[in-house]
Each structure stands twice: as C-alpha cells, then as structure tokens.
Image 1 (spheres, rainbow, N blue to C red):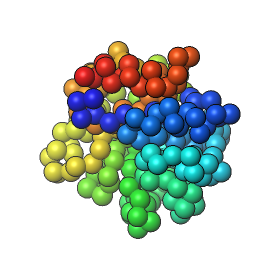
Image 2: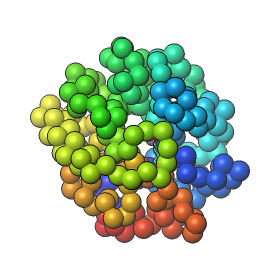
Image 3: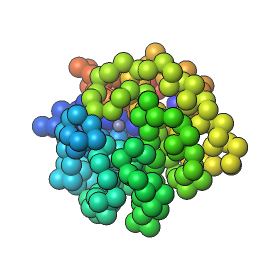
Length: 217
Ligand code: DX5
Ligand code: ZN
C-alpha cells in the first residue's frame, strides 16, 4: 500500500473469535491493541489476559496502545504478555522520558501519543527517543468515532519535526481512518494507519483490509 503500514484495531473485532479475527488480518502489518482503564479514558476495554491470548494466536507485530493512567506501572507486564510495541500517552505520566526509556530497556519499540486537544509541543522533547509517534485523530476511548479534520495538519507538523531531526520513527494515526481519508493521511506523512470499524465490518476483516489497501494503491 505505497509503503504505508496498516494496523487493524482489535477493539472492533469479534472477541468470541479472536484467533480467527487475527488470522483474517494476517496480511496486515501490525495488530493494534487498545488497552483502556476506565480512568484515563471513560471506557474499559481489556488488558493483559487478552493480550497474551492474542500473542498465542498470531505472529503479527502487536502494537499496544496504552490508554491507562501511569502506564509505567504496567510496562513490564505488557512486555511480558507479548507486546512488540508499547505506546504511552503524554497526558498519562509525569515522567514521559522515563516511560519511553523503560520500554526500550524492555527490548520493545517505544511509542508516544497525545490526545487531539493536547499541543504538539508536549511530545517534542522525546521525539529523538521514540520509535513511533501516534497522532490521535479522535478523543480516545471508543471505536467508530468521526475523524477530527485538524489532525491532518498535526500529522504534517510532526512529519516535518521528525524529518528535521533525521528520525526514522513511524508516524501513526488512529481514529476514524477509512478508505476515504487514507490517501490524505498518507500524503500528510503518516506511515501507519490504524483502523478499527472500517476494517472489521460485516463482510469480514480481510475485505476491509483490501479496501484500505486499494484506497492507497
Ligand atoms: C480509540 C482507539 C482506536 C479505535 C479506532 O480510543 O485508540 O484504536 O479502536 O477505532 P476506529 O477506527 O473505529 O475509529
Ligand atoms: Zn488505539
């Protein structure tokens, strides 16, 4: 898909068929795993047992998005449960640099992310220390929300900042991604697209994934 990686979000899958759902996205680049604690975000999704079940079911890169307060408390547990990458919110920890460093010390890919209302400046101090920057294009907590258009300019700005420091970090976007805006996001400089409801539709995730790829081709 023109070099852009696709990361279906398991939040939108059928959990009674987790193994099959993972098999149906075997052609994806990452499986995106949304962990919510009911505190950082107003919803609870799932945690360590589901991550380790996913780990047993797939060889896909597990891209874990931690929407939890003080993620540093659980980084080791998520690493041991099978995460390949761990992304923390800048709003959730007073020690962002320490958190991303811990992820790298655990041998995992370190990501940082921020809510749509948080100034981009908040992630700037750690741009040189991360392997992935995630731009939230909805307020985190739920799947199926509408893409916030101002996110496009935020992706462009982060693209420029990463290029300026010669970073090869992935630039990921999450929330309201569909075949209709995928190309625009690619053009703005995103390298990974997360998609939940637009992939796990009624006709199955394999078809959903193809529609996204076609939109990028
Ligand atoms: C939202 C999650 C997203 C969500 C995306 O809090 O971080 O990963 O699953 O779902 P869609 O693609 O339906 O917006
Ligand atoms: Zn997510």
